[in-house]
Length: 200
Length: 200
Image (cartoon, helix red, strand yellow):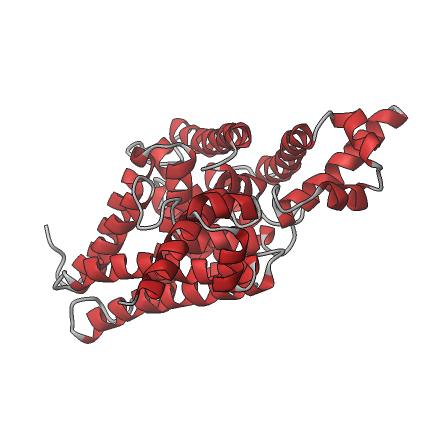
């Protein structure tokens, strides 16, 4: 890896943490300079504008979060255990996340949905990928005979992700992981009910 | 109502709409001036600071949203139909809300949770009231023999609200109410399963 590339990744990592905790609008150029150790000129040399840095930092945060979830899912053998790995990955996000501040897709969705169209489009695309990722796990489970055929994969993916994102918001707001524990249990039971042979 | 009070409510209404769509940080003092038609001095005369206006506008937005939900719930006779009214109220929030921009509690929770302690405390208190409100409907349903006794009212309230808030976030992100339709059906069926005599 070239020195220039490493620096760019480091800037993105620090900017992503700043934006994901403070918000894109609240983080000023001087906050970004303080977080990255760069001068104003250095930031513009790398990214051209604060807006461009925001977009790239969002992509960076999504890559990090996505890689973490994918790694945990890939380690599991069945569709049920893969979905449980997603539930567990979300459960840890309120305390500890690859990029501090919780789920960058939800944070960006909420901040951008009425006022920042370019960021909103990226958040929308990232959320669509997450939903498709979950939907595919469910479809594979059905195709391989693990899940019942009447499970609607797209609807179930939407339901699960809505619940996990909302639960994460509550956990962060109440600074308490215990807020989401019943939610994890509920969904793990629900997913178990999708399997053709119910485990005891 | 005195003229001064009317003006204060009007400022809060416009400021709440601005903050709930743009976000507290993105809305500048000149945005607030443009939205309210007030000069800088007029805003400071009424509220002392932007921070104070933010807090009062948040309270205003919560009062409006809370009154809307309460009105729809109070019109229903049973615990089941009251909870369905909550689900329907959330479903309309992505398209049309008393204060534009969706749920002010979730929006404020996400924006404030890592960086604005005073707003976060208000969002936390408002969310706690919402959860208690739902919990009480469920408890009343149990006490009156409508719901089964083994339903955990607090946990069920958390689950329902997490799901509705997450669903609202998805609906707004995808600019599509159809995203939450399966979620509404799912929860209405789930709530029906809590009743002692299951309706067909």
